Image (cartoon, rainbow, N blue to C red; front, side):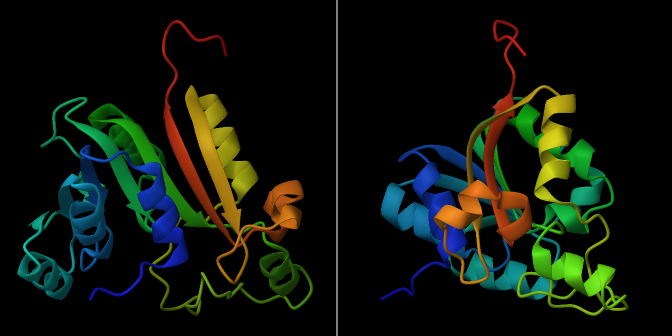
Length: 207
């Protein structure tokens, strides 16, 4: 019997239509793709850089390519999948805007999740303690972190607005990976993890 998905991955899975085509960027050991294949008959593909994780994912029977996301998605045709997923990886790439736009070229929609640097604990650690923030979603010290482009929820909203990206759904979770009424009222202050489902604005849509 398979283990349950992390709460954030379960939200992603709930957003994905049964029988659709999914590309999971930074798929790790393939937990999400494995779940989607079994529970929703999704035709999934993964991209992962880490050798050991690629081996584990392929051992589960998943289709995984070993590629560096900083090199883009030029191997994939436009609208070749229904959904492209980028879970807790946007902040670790060198060109996040470019990768986001590539996701929305390759997929009809994209799902992006990232740690929120606007969270009150991160603000407190930097503003009052004078230290680089560490939270449940950002557990690394400044000298060994893989994250190079951290942002807040407000930053990501601005990026979407500037690039004609429509936010179709958003969920903001606290440190227990739960959505609360307070998170929904003050997402940039109380949300520790943000999840977005988005797509490029069509020519018929008004800004």
